[in-house]
Image (cartoon, rainbow, N blue to C red; front, top):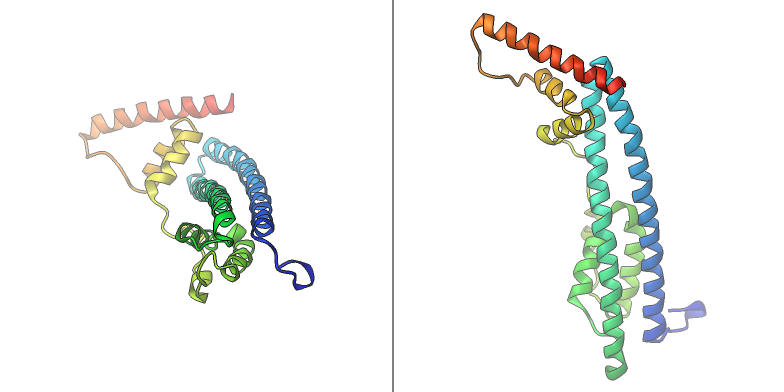
Length: 214
């Protein structure tokens, strides 16, 4: 529907949806840029933690970094889905020139069902879904669908993912320190050999920590 309740033609309706989708895609690009900028700051903080040997703080920061990676991945997926909706709408409009009206689409239904779960764009996608329902493009989504938002919290972050981030950002130094802090260790060796090996490892780690300060 347009202003004053005027019913839009299929062409006008699709144009409106495409405009809305592209607007959200640009917004998603800005969010991705902002998240990546914040990640640069987190990287610097993790390196500072490595210099001071603060494993606990570094792991907390690494979890935030992994969470940000997942958010960026989710946003890229959402952007691709929005672009797919646009292409589906264009194909639907081409068919409407023959049939006289827009047709229902299970493909669009599936993509919109996914998009309304993305916290960053959920409200706009919900509103657009309702418009598409009125136009007969998709079926009405139940309230439970709208409530099933993607949880941005990673309650049980995989230890290996966190340690991998630490190792990557600190050139391997912090990954080893995090492993030691969480109790992971090699099988017990002979006391003298273990002590000698420990000294070598410590010297190597100190050398790499010094390199981080350079």
